[in-house]
Image (cartoon, rainbow, N blue to C red; front, side, top):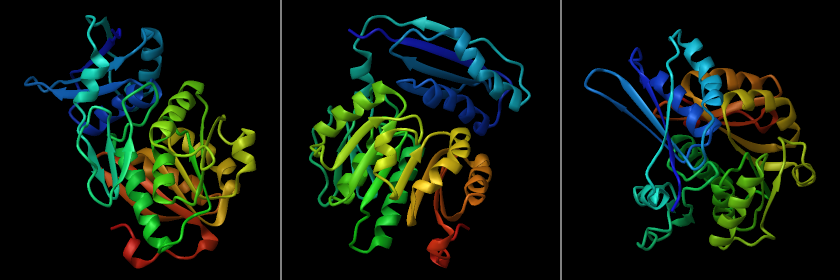
Length: 312
């Protein structure tokens, strides 16, 4: 049986769902919770609960939440950490996720017995220790962006694609399925994520000759550097790291390449786009899903964005 720890946070003074999304992002993306949920009670209080496979450090959680409280001028409130009774929580959690049909992609867990829809690209991804099971709007935004890019390729395919901060490697695997002739590189600074990604690659029957995975802190890793420049770079991380990464990322993007940035709250999109605009990128499209925005960008020399793609 798996031991599960629940971290609960009650936000009595919060009425804006955007603020709640900021707190959720700390749990789901910085702390890599297995599952995160929120509910609004009849007393107008937001309750957030995150589940972990390890005993979370309350002091670390408090430290990471502090900037969010400060940003919204809220009085910090204590988190509650509880070890839950022994049950097969992970299996129960997985069973609660239905298959998702996003564009051409059909994302499903091992508990799904249905056959993939005709002409879909199936991706088998279970909730695990690495971020990216396909259920979060940031992942959906990237997958929809890839569909858009594929239409621009008009039957051709990129030669090299990079999934930076790959987590479960769902985006890299999607690229491998969408463009079978493309060489895909997946990189993450977490060795556990790379181990999970390698297992996912095998389960999805993607050859190691088509998709390579490696540990890399940003673009410092040898495998990442030697396989560029990339025709497509996918980075579903967080707004802060994306901004800092801009100067080191752009030299690895091909002159006619495509850049997909995600993990960005709507109000952060302009500053992320500006950071990449300062190093030679042009905004091509925005994809908004709920409180989250994914950006599609290209080098300036790639030309103007068609009117059809312009954000309204």
